[in-house]
Length: 74
Image (cartoon, rainbow, N blue to C red; front, side, top):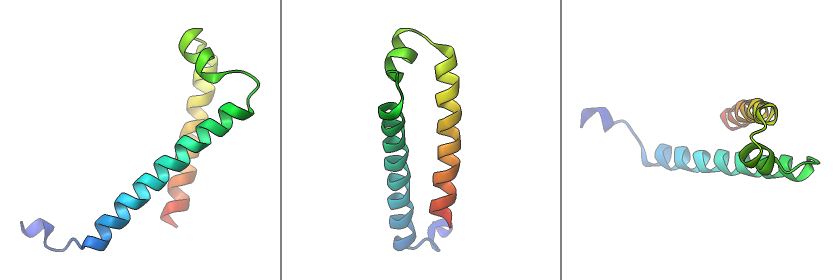
């Protein structure tokens, strides 16, 4: 229990808050990208198996995750 002695409640609440904030921003970003693109991303990736679209969206999601993490961290 000594390992948890220095953890404050405010730090835990802030971590949970920023976790859900990051997830919400990430999910909203995906839906905005899907809304702005001329194709249906879910249909292209899941139903048609378009690997090229999956790679592009995956790289966009990685860059968005890095951006969101750096914004929250600052």
